[in-house]
Length: 278
Image 1 (cartoon, rainbow, N blue to C red):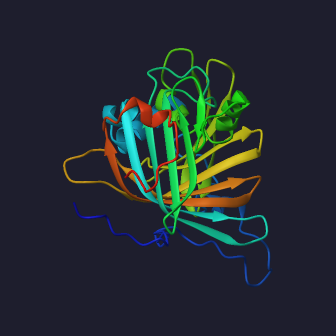
Image 2 (cartoon, rainbow, N blue to C red):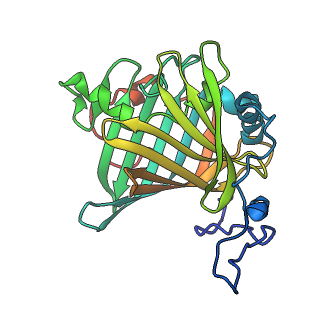
């Protein structure tokens, strides 16, 4: 299978957006009447509800197979930014997910998860969750308070379940995400947890998610979308992750598989692999 090739620098088509200049003679900002020429200053189509926006985002991302994928496998690489300003490259990086049918709390781990990362042939990270307990490269973690660490990372799935019973949706003021006009919505899960999303106005692609975590306010920004022949699923190729406004890492996804079955023991590893399992 041929790998998708794409640039890592997003090319945003802003040429169609009129640029409003200050009055050269007076140096004053644009007149109030000119605000309509500024993207996202005025709410686009106020009659469009948050429910409508989320439903269209579902369709744009791949429809029913995206909302209820069952299982998902992603592989690529990950660039970790250290607190000292350095960089660590996980040159082989993969994630396996089995999604739960319901998600009453968007910020707790549900279903099953495995994350595996390597650098120059050495294992950098191994984490697994089998639906009840968390594992690392040494096997079952003795301190299962580790389960709480997932809450610093989980939240994007909120938009998959956002139209389920017990969830509410609220439209926020339109905004810009990486220079692109976006609808902003706030989703509240049945437990009362809040997650915010930015949906590109031009095509309903999901560009942004933000939510509170024990590590701080967490944001993810999505770009470089790609798909594969015969599959409706649309995958962001680049995911930038921030905590309290500082970029922590960015995952570059090169390939994906939907519905791939893996052994149950992969989510509960008893020992570290000697080489990448993907």
